[in-house]
Length: 621
Image (cartoon, rainbow, N blue to C red):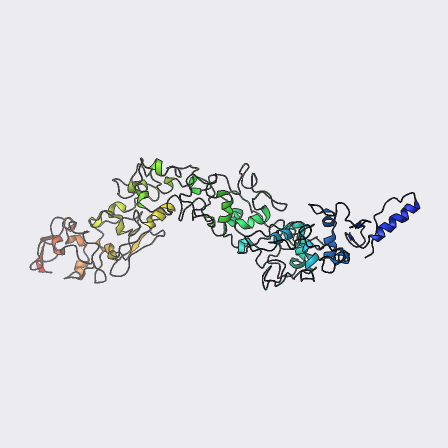
């Protein structure tokens, strides 16, 4: 190639000038240039030695003179004239591939992750003695290979068989790849642009169309709308103050294995340590985001809604995010509460929220979560300080890692109000609710709790009582009105019993009420001594229907039931066998007496004598 010399003031001696020109001409065959037309920096001097500074630990004139850019952009090089067409020595007998120059034959240049990746790390560095442009010197301007280096495409030993790109097929850790492109120096953007350009039309190599495409002529950049990303990738309202919607935080806490969400996606622009990059601000000590003085990529303590915070980390999806949390919250770090995890995981265990590598054990630490265990329900004022107080306070506000006890036991402290009363506060202990707010609303509990002689909640809350997982979950996330699950023995003849949990708050198909819809549980009322028809109907459709004798005569049906049935004698057995289809004692035992119009009733002959002047004379029923 034809060399040019740097411009300089000519010497006063013309003969000296000729000698100097001859010297440059002799060495012109070994030189390099920035771009065609630029001045030449000679590689060797008149004695055949490299000029001072050609090779230095930081690259020197050879690396920093833009040789690589010149060759990568289609220029020819005089390197081959001296070092041979394969750059392995030539007439100079100096190979370009040695430890002092280029990577070959450095051991481990290509390795399998997680081993050190000298090859990939060097390619992702800033252009100069490394960067994508330097790869093209040997692998060709299109990376398809040359006589001195193999192709980067479909190379099973390198990027993978069938991979038609100069990088692996999955180049994001968050999507399951072993490698990550977000650590690539942005100065390599022109090289990426050759495949990943966004020009206003669909590009199969551009999975994410920029939200604000760059105008024509914009220089290639990773975050300026010319390729996959934008500088402003977040929509309006991305960062907001609670109780407004928090798309920023909610998106960060989603599954990190899905592109565009989860903690790994935040690292793309904000850096692996969230300290910020040239394209994304720091997440630490940022008053506009996580708060001034907050040296973490999340809100200040407490980070639990149960502790009085407007934010909570319990909704952060573990998948794909745990490894990022581990960078600060690894076992034994000052960012882990004392004693967490109680039993550290074996060395090498991948980070997980509930596998003893971070704060929690298999289902939370130092106890299982949900903590539906007898040791939970038997905690006392004496055992609480040693067993529980390291992680829990009885009442909010709290900055401890675990929720306050009153999160679930909302009526009273469970250390002083034992058993049901810490939530329902019904006297005596274990009695029905007797307060004004859920889950302590009386409703019709007082009337029902001791019916059938049971004195138990299980009749209507079967499997939902204290020490059951359903009860635990309801207490953990209280939501009115409560759940109802009737025991099967209380199903009416007409079908399975149920409870309308909407505004009606009414039971249906319950044998106690003869399968009929009941009044509203909280506001309704029913007088069992006068409103018999609310539970009993003529016929045989229900277990408690009446059809015997002369009940169906129109004359009898005009009168209330209490004309013949004595409520005092009825009360003895009335509610004693509600869980069976059988009658609660002989009906004949309730006929006649004070308050009725029947003077006498003979069970043997089934005949009654009404009071004088009423109805009829003595007749057989």
